[in-house]
Length: 113
Length: 114
Image (cartoon, rainbow over all chains, first blue to last red; front, side, top):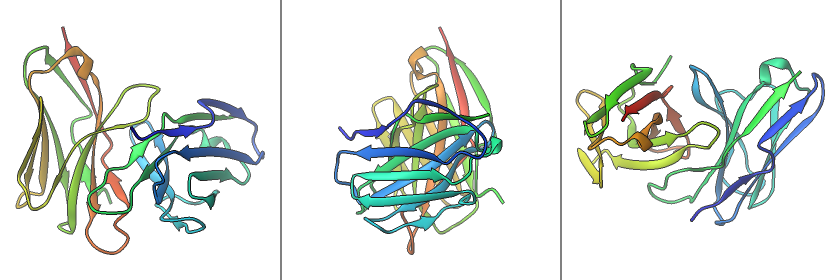
């Protein structure tokens, strides 16, 4: 079974802080993704990485950056946290061939005070 | 502009009956379609998928139907069970180019009553 692990289930930070969300997958997947989920808005893609050190902006990249130094790890960085970044953050990974689905972690519930 | 629409925010059915969840899309370039199930405080779990060369795919109690001419996708759950109560997201992928990306609908909350 694919295992995608997000380092924290719940996180509380203050406005202006730099916040790191970590995600690790154990299946040697090339592609990794960061989404946020908000009520009534579904899942929105923030950034994705199709391989190590490669990244592309998703639909809502503003205020975020990412890092992929190793294949198994994909980090989401909130450069200066703001209250409108309070959300559920979801990481996913997939194999880079054919019709492979994305596999998700259990999410990080981030609150910015 | 919303490219993937799940027009019913919620659906309630009785245990043992059929649940039908619907999804409409606007872009004819979408060629791969998936359904995910999500329980509260957990990540989405992949349920079933279908490629555009098919019009039906079945896995146990779950069947996905694709009507390309109508740009419509549906998920049938028969028989429905209380454990199926969750939010269901449809998602699609565009052919060609950066086809890693999925576009998600906003989800439908299914409640199966005992």
